[in-house]
Structure formats: C-alpha cells, structure tokens
Length: 222
Image (tube, rainbow, N blue to C red):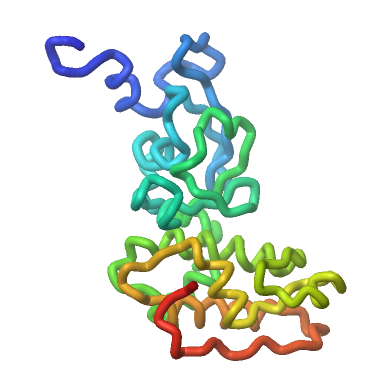
C-alpha cells in the first residue's frame, strides 16, 4: 500500500488499456490480449483477474454492457463472443486472445443503421429503465442465430429437432431461450414480441410451420 492508498496492482488495473506497446514483456500478473471488438482490433495489457465485462467497461469505455449480479445470473452483461452469446462477467479477458467480440455498441451497421432487433425493441416498447436492454439485445441476436442453425432448446419438439433445419421460434421457444436474461421492470412481453417480429421477417419462406404469435398473457419468461 502506498501513501496514496492504493497498491501498484490496483493502479495498473485502474489505468486499463495497454500503455506499453504491443509485444512488450508481460509481468507475472499481466498479459497482452489481442481481440477484435465491434470490428476493431485491439491489444490490451490486462491483469489476469480482469473479466471481459470489466475490460469492456473500465478499459475500453464500452459501457453498454451492464454489471448486474456479477455472478452470471441476470444476463445484463451478455455479449457475443465468436458469434455466440456469453456472460461477460464470467469470462476472464486473458482467455479470449484472438476472439471476436460484439457488444451492443456494435450491433448497428457502419452507417449507424440500427439492427432489426433494435428497431423491433423500439416498435414494441420492449424496455422501461433500459438497464437490461443491451444484454437482452445481444442475447436475442444469439437466439436468432442458434435457431437458424437448428440448435434445439429444451422445449423444441424432439421430432423436429431430429429432422434438423432451422427451429421455428414460437412464443414458448423465445421465452425459454431468453430465460437467462432478467428484466426487473417486467418488459418481457414486449421483448418476446420484438424477437418474434424479427424472427418472422427472417424465417425462410420454405418453412412449413408458422410460428404462433406471442402469448401476451404471461408476465415473465420462465
């Protein structure tokens, strides 16, 4: 502990992105990590204990991803790692060398055009305070990709899963697949409807089973 009340390790942690040039020697507690974040290549010098969430928020000022429970239970920190959704609070940043990461800031295209899910959330009023919205959006992007690639959930009809092909996102499917993302404001109906809207617009025309409209009666995703 120094006269300023912090240890050297704490000061290094607070200063975030690598001050040293890429390739400089790492000490026993820090390593250089090369990642591609929202289409931009970055090299960070990070303490081995820094989570992906803290690296994004504290070192890169990408504060869209939120810290809720910090235990992987609320989904507020959900981001996409190599195209798959993950809880940023549970991943050590140094384990992601070479990974491609997308946060809510990277969902819109280069011209600022909102992602279809972002537009659908606005149309369906799928938020209130907005704290969980970045995680809900990133998780929903992952859900659409998983369903389109035929990945079943625990509520997918076994016969349909055996046939293969894209999974039709019924209201039950959407609620199950998003059950790891909590919303204390209770905006679940709008969230499920927004995902259903985008799913219906992107579902292949050859799909022989139409997804039922979301049931507006449930208050929670369970």
